[in-house]
Length: 201
Image (cartoon, rainbow, N blue to C red):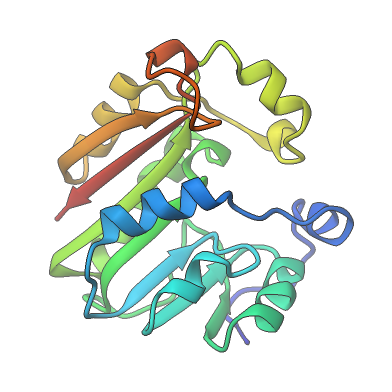
């Protein structure tokens, strides 16, 4: 594991030590469906415990939490980098795909723009990025947040339209949609917990 920023404790470290944070099977399936058959290099920004990394052959994991990366090191044999989502310490045109799963809501507007601008920089000319975020319009959100250890750290919430608008400032939005959670709930925007977007340079 390489460290490319200072080693100050992340506010997420305690959560990983006490509870961990693993994506659901349904969430992983959505990410993989959007990724398709990726033959190039993948960067998972905010990789957490490295669960999504397991599904890509050529991938790098990055997280601001050292504790998360230590857990990821036990789960995957991949390059792991300690850095913030607003500073991607890689050369221009380094990746074919970026995964930004449940990251954007923890950043203010200025930092979101920094992250997306840097994401565009490290993507290859034909590169794509997957963005996943909670749907602020979901009526069940307060209930889910009781069980979400990261809820208190959320800075800004997005609906489908506001997320699309923000992404369009930096990328071409190929698709954006909502998914219910649990998956047996009916498809209705006010019940759909999470949004997924696929964008291109």
